[in-house]
Image (cartoon, rainbow, N blue to C red; front, side, top):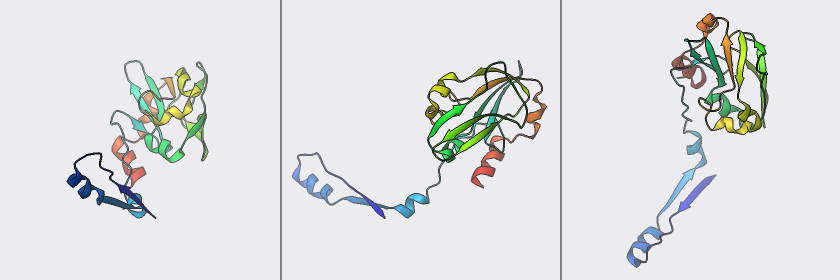
Length: 167
């Protein structure tokens, strides 16, 4: 399958119009499949192999948890998000919620033990917004961590990129 793009000149100059009328661009679908997606993996985050990330504030041992842009892309359109309530406790490696897309329902795993001190209510109301800014406004929960040592096994941005993109 090929897609074509034809340029339709808006100029009143006849010579210019004749030259541009014959210009067209054909993009073959196979070429589109060869273009790799480029994702950001911020260096200030730590990543789990289950695609959650942790942004640590060491001053007060709080951890902001979200999911990577790669995971969001793989899921497709997100339609539902279930997160714990403020005050609930989460445990390292255990499920703390679910994210549902048109393709799948996935469990969310906590990178640390601790108490939930905030959750992204706006994202619960409009879960599709997670695709717009997964590392910024689309964080999931914030946890007062009991101990940050659980993150010792988390991946750096470069390690995570190598895992998901195979580079």
